[in-house]
Length: 305
Image 1 (cartoon, rainbow, N blue to C red):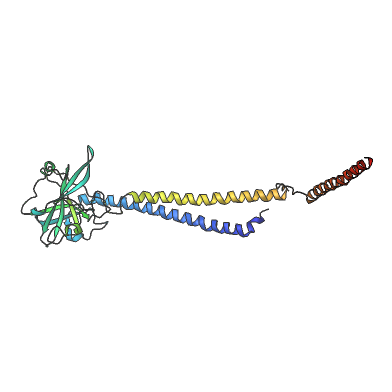
Image 2 (cartoon, one colour; image 1 turned 120 degrees about the vertical axis):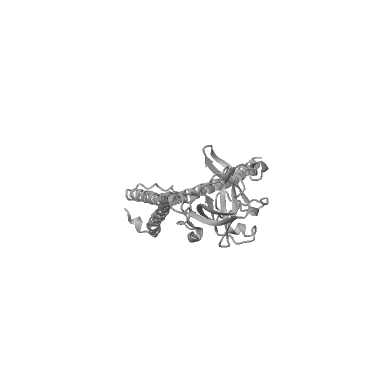
């Protein structure tokens, strides 16, 4: 009854199912592993951030380049602020007891003893960076030589939250904190990193360090989890369709073995059509015979006259 499984059509179906099911399971397991790796990395990053808050600050040069390990570490640098190039970073949100509020970062460049400048986010203020009333609240940076300490951060990119990479900002504002954005603003070299001060000068509020890119539970992590479910659903769908086709073929084979296949519609008999044609011909002959008979009667009538 299951001989249909040996047909070429079913050979193709079986080969497809045998290859598709393990492939879907493998891809689902791989996506699940990616999600678990992101969760583990996120937990490790949080642990490092907690340790970094209590660890002693290290010179910024010893922590470069910024990676997942050094991101968030306490870094220190010594120099003097360039008061002529204070910049405001607009459209940045910060959470407080009122929820998320819109504001701007206050960024100054610290000219270090090594010649390069270190971008320093001195803090955050609520309001609009384009409003004179809001920017008037920004305190001036300390004068003279100072030592700053804060959490080390990697340069921002176009995918960072709050970044305005399109340009078009007024003078004195910066859309993205990175060495590439600052190279055309200041006439000296800039570190490819920045720090956010731990202790902000009032009324500024300290900006908490962000998690290193690729280490948090971001949208990509939940995309991996969603893809995991999709691949397992695909594997189940292949199994479902194979059993559905198999059951239908098995029922058809069983019906054929019991002689329960639907009967074909009877074909019209050619003899019936031929007979009908013959009858029509006979009627034509009879009609033809009526003609001579009528001629005889007419001839008889002429004779009587």
